[in-house]
Image 1 (spheres, rainbow, N blue to C red):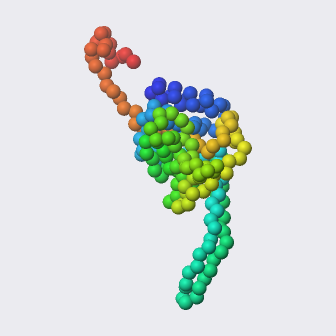
Image 2 (image 1 turned 60 degrees about the vertical axis):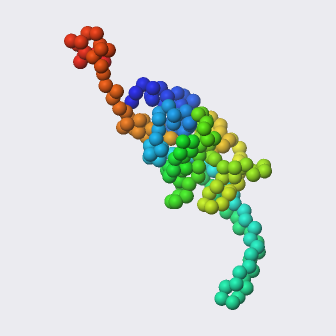
Image 3 (image 1 turned 90 degrees about the horizontal axis):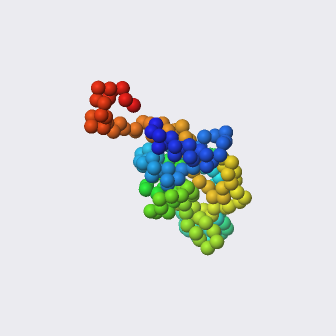
Amino acid sequence: MNKFSLTTILFYLALSGCSSNNYVPMTQELRLQEKLTASELKSLQYFICPGINIHFHEMIDDSQVNKGVLIQRNGSRDIRLEVEDWSPAVGLHATDHLVAVSLERGLAIPFGVDQGAESGAYQVLGRQNGRDFEVFYNGNWYRLQQGEPVECNDQLYYFPQIWVDTQALEEIIDERRALKGRFVEEYPDQENRGLRP
């Protein structure tokens, strides 16, 4: 691993404090500094902390004719989805400013920063709807239910974000490390150039 990469990862470990797990927050700075490609981002193991608690509420008021019978439906439908702290997720899609992570087959939740941003933690993305923040999932807009701040790696966080395992990140960086080569002119003592670091 090159020195710059190791320094960067150690910096993020220091930010997250000494903890039993070795996760660092996924940030735009980390992505840009390490030049992580979309393919590399999709191959990382992600974890979500704080967890996610989302709620979808729909009023049902429709009627239809089925085999000559009028069927009237009135009422409501409620769906609540909970993701526990440190739930594992895989990357399904990545662009310049986001990673959509999946907790179940075929469905994903986007995490990232504002388009064009060069810094910031990858937090859950969505839209503001009045006083509510909503997340798009499985074809519907779910209301994010925020509670008390949650401790993730010895710091308190209010908003769900994604984290990566430092060991997996190091492995990806090591795999694509390329040697730049050397020029004779850079070493005045040419007889011993093979012994120089």
